[in-house]
Length: 162
Image (cartoon, rainbow, N blue to C red):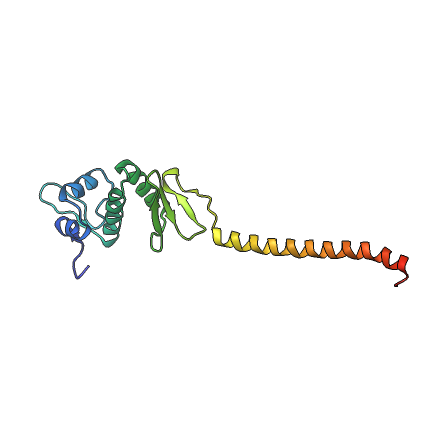
């Protein structure tokens, strides 16, 4: 924060890349409330913490990606209510929903209140399938060999070649 107690509105707008009108609207509708100092009447300044700037930038990026403000609001509210640590988290969207990804195995739909999303990594499936095919082919070869022995053995006995 470079020695200040918080970031003022105009600073926030420049840093995050939003208009003051957006910042004011989002503060008044409590999408992102300034956590250092809320507005306290005419002439007072809102002061935002670094974490507030992270949320504001996240909101801006989601809006820029075409997500509606209503869906962005739902996602941000869920994250705030859940108390999730957003550090190390990736936020993704398919245009219809917003997902929080902690890892390739942990993906949650934020618009469905944290419902887990089913995902399958294809590379491990391919490796497993190749292994299964190899085992199948080996068993098939063993079966063919056993069948061949079963056919040849009676012929050897008839011919007296034990």
